[in-house]
Amino acid sequence: MAGTKVRRDITNLVNFSRGQLGLAAESLAGHPSPHVGIICGFFVRHAEPASPETDGLNGMAQLAAGLLEAGIRVTVITDAPCAKAVWAVTKVLPGKVGLEIVDVDAEAVRTLRSRLVSDAHPMTHLVAIERCSLAKDGKPHREHGWDISGDTAPLDYLFTDEDWTAPWVTVGIGDGGNEIGMGNLPQDIVERDIPNGAKIAAVTGSTFLLVAGVANWGAYGLLAALAVLRPDAREDLLRHFTGEFERTVLTAAVEVGQAIDDSRVDRPGQLQMTIDRLPLEDHIQVIEQMRELVLQEVPA
Image (tube, rainbow, N blue to C red):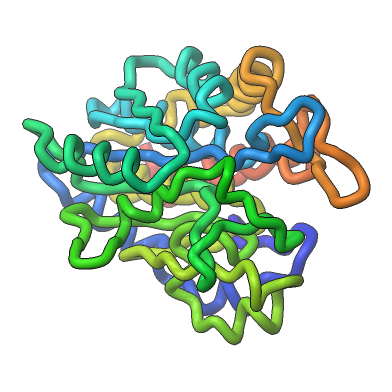
């Protein structure tokens, strides 16, 4: 369901990552005291106004809301260009998350990393949702091949770095081959199946990779899978996994955070209540279908 084809054919990417959703959920469900970091925010300068896109924001919110209700600590991480939209979304969550915002440079990311590692209750899992990865030239690129390093902090360094290995389990969620986590894929798959794949293909991998038709859907799938594995926390995990909350989040992202969508080479992105060019109703339908599957899998 999460891997349904939307605009580009990602069948081979989805097939390569098949089974990873269950493993990621099992890692979370089996930890006695998880602390989950969630990275989101994909800034688009070629937009009116220049803002992060809506994809990733709702995924963060749905996952964070479920975890918070289940008593799990959450830290949300983004960079300065995406700060307003991410902050706006955190304000509609059912509880308080830690919010970390870094400048757009490697030193800022590594400084944050040192602080996160030394936290009294450090992160156990780190999830990136629709977050642009560094490519083989050392720069992040939009799907058109544009270099966006001036607007994008290398949060990859919270996943891997020279002479440093992440002490937490990492999960990458994306839909286009250029997101953190997609470095797990054989590069020839991205080069063959994704436009401009040779230039934009991610090099940053993750412990688990979730490929979805829309990145948000991968986060929804992770929450749903966790609810299957944790029937004791099912009601809490799914309390806000509803169409109503999905609408509340997107409204905050667009009206307060000025998140945009539908940015193309020939047309700057606009403020609109869509995600990956799909109307809100399509995303609500995915949530309702996943919720129904969970409730069938784990009867009351």
